[in-house]
Image (cartoon, rainbow, N blue to C red; front, side):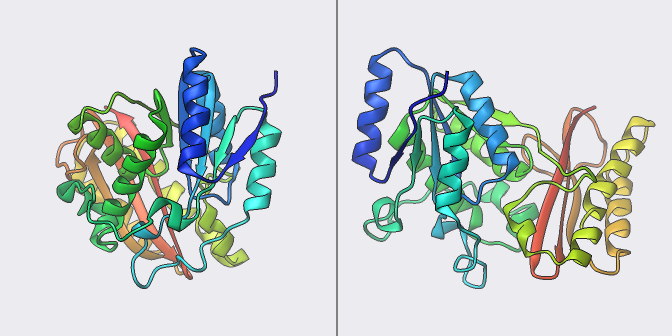
Length: 286
């Protein structure tokens, strides 16, 4: 049966709605997003509806996670479309759509930081990004107090950092990871794909093709992390459009580069195609 869908813009109103649901014995799920929803986000909503009775989706473009020269002002937004998509799923109870002043009514004196994990991969070129992510997710967790929260595997470093934050701070929240949703040719769904020209879009598939090559190498018995990372870098660098940011083989638990591939690992890549910076990864148990 389709849910009764509501939009909520204030923390007080959201807390009242969640409290009423909890008083009725309902399990609460949170799906944090920055909006401009696509099939990947909707897969998170679907997963949340399987995990809980009452689903909250937040739509908030968080200024804390954007650097001075990044795309905060131009980040794609279409709230009316997002609300329509959520209502059409029949799986979302509340869309939480706060203004910046609602989330940050005063300059933040408190932040959540995981400096070692945040300095790796994307953090090498986006200093402060993951402090912004961890801080806003912590705020959302305190506002909603969900039983479960759903995150996409595409943002693999973010997922690892959120898992560690929850563990370190003893937050009573189950973190559910949802597989990456891809286009037919393997390109990961991303709000930033809208930045791609047709030519850039064609070349952007080099990321998934590179990850697939690395996965095949591992499946065939190659356990040399450095050699596979080097091979991934060579493949992306050889593309005439791509500008390589990184290609690494890391431990999923702490994001450290590994020499011998075993246990839970992540193959992680990032590159620029025009002005769009795209990331992707595959997570494997070896």
